[in-house]
Length: 399
Length: 165
Image 1 (cartoon, rainbow over the protein chains, first blue to last red):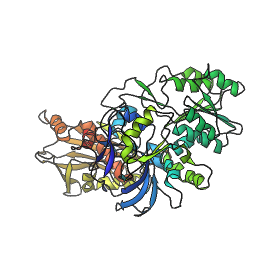
Image 2 (tube, helix red, strand yellow):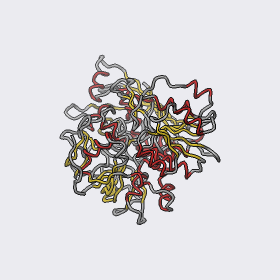
Image 3 (tube, chains in turn brown, blue):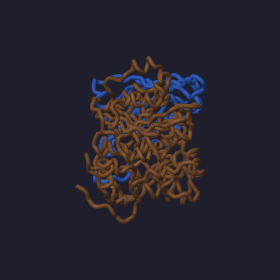
Image 4 (cartoon, chains in turn brown, orange):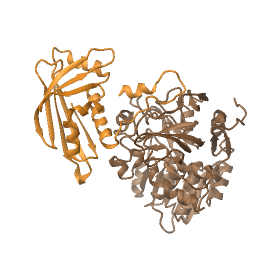
């Protein structure tokens, strides 16, 4: 099959590789009909995530059709149309039974690495380093899906792929980021970063009953998309003092809920390489700890801070005194996908949200190398790429 | 050496699986077979590709149903060790706390080194992985793996991580 493989920093290419097969009784194999590039894939592209190996297949936002099932798969049948969550969960450990699916005890074959780095293991993910399981990803024609009765959501309606595809990650991730802050009547929600997750958080905040949503970014097209999603916006590059601007828009209080949809990643958090303190911003290319500090500084006292943006290492000068003094509640982590997919599918089906409105590029899987580069370098132009396996190549090569 | 994990099964389910030692090659990757000799004694065969088979006879020296199994190797075995596995209900009925303790008697001063070579990892980490595999089998019904999946490379580097445990 054809698959987008990582071959080092800024080097990805579509290779012909063997087709995946069933390796365990609870596996299924899916033929992928649509797959996307996530903002977090850019960390892999930029070479800042350790425990990647040349040849690893990327991609963790995909959907398709079941073509093969293992002997212990009971709920899925060949021919079923499914959206697959990026988190792999066994469904039967205590973490899964408490709906902490992204903390599954049993799905990471390399559990020993996060166990040494973080003190415990978390779920395996598709296409996101060997520390997180080393599972081949879904920017490919086919993918093997472990624990296939637990993750994939069967979708039988006639809704097109592109309205459902983001149930695989960014819609639940943006939604959960706001939902876990328990929106109350009259709450103002501010979202730092109007990338794909921020866009989903903005739309979810309105659905969850926020009185006002503020989107913060520096790219005009992303701010326009946030406005389309119901937010008022701030271009932080155009205001002198972001904190004052936010205060002035909230009667001096600050937002009740602040969402860091930017995140930060650090080099070398594996057991094999000592954790160092190199920080790397996600989506917004500002000073690394800047957004997290700002979110805590701006949040209303007694408010809630939610961190869907990815952090993997250490940060300097975390303003714990500010968070403590204002009595903030912090909530964070990878999304417990399996808990959210069905209710959010229902919202899409009911027409309450159309996640596809953030798509800027629909191209072939064969275009993926050019798409990665454009997505990283032209954030105003490119918000979200959807890749179609088997479609003809349409993007010019870029250097 | 001691390691603990909580497993989302009852003590009697876990005790029942472990006490049938012939089940243990499923969770102990280097154990090729266990043969039950009688109610208390069993024969263990461990093999690494390209290496000699190591065998030992093991004897149950203490046993409390659904709580504890203790064993030690018999005189004349290639390997000398003693171990205990304890099962106790976790607070709030949230599964069973399982504690595995193993002591090695150094036979001729060479045994630990031989064991490390055999397992390609520290005996402590090997014990941890064996207990983790027990949990994975009891909860998920299978041990997660990526060995055999596709990648855009010749050699399988995935195995590097799974074998580096």
